[in-house]
Amino acid sequence: MTEIIQGSTEDVLLLCDHASNAVPDGIDLGIARELLDLHIAVDIGAGPLTRSLAAALDAPAILATVSRLVIDLHRETDHIGLIPHRSDGHLIPGNDSADRTGRIARFHAPYHRILRDRIRAQRPGLILSIHSFTPRLEHGGSDRPWQVGVLYNRDTRAAHPAVQFFRDAGFVTGDNEPYSGRLLNATLNRHAEGQGIPSIAIEVRNDLIRDAAGVAAWTRTLADLTNSLRNSLARNGSVAT
Image 1 (tube, rainbow, N blue to C red):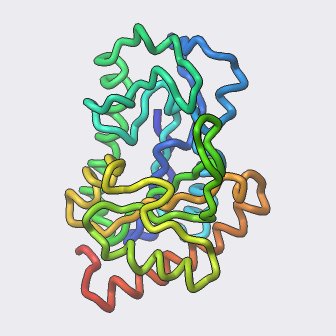
Image 2 (tube, rainbow, N blue to C red; image 1 turned 45 degrees about the horizontal axis):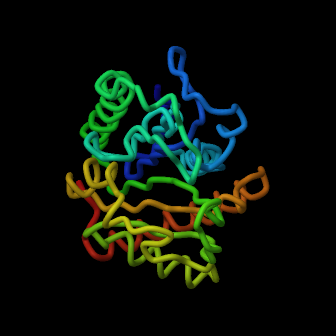
């Protein structure tokens, strides 16, 4: 359940863990169909933005094609939220009796094998993981003022320059906001930081990328960011080889 975009650029790899709201055959989440269009099921706009950025950079990209309500590929296999029973106040009753081992084997393990194998073969100098966030959670949330957030764990080689780039460009920027990459950074911890590769997760507020014009605008911004990070990493001798 993975979409792979080929590209001739070898120094950058794009990832999108939450690109799809698809529920595969044989799985019944027990929810109303309209819930699959909400942020609980998919990172709204993240898939189109990743594809557009891949085209602009001529860079490879790997996008997951299963809803995060089926299994969250951006979680460790022992994480409590791997197969969610509730998301932003919405119950997911079909997951109460889910075959956890089966879903890991069917979706999680193959996805992460693809990431592992691609990274071993390509050895990119920079990995960008594209996500989006809702302006306000439905249950117990407050307004999120950020237009974009940069998430990271311990490796700050790409993160600090990215935060500065967005702020210099005039964006209201979250530094490990709207949540901390030190707590939720499973994919990059494993495939980037764990391999010594500079990386960040980029969280764009989803109301800014809901349409083609927004995706196009943020594609230009993220393409400029990528070139800025390339220069920054090269100056500091941080590009992986």
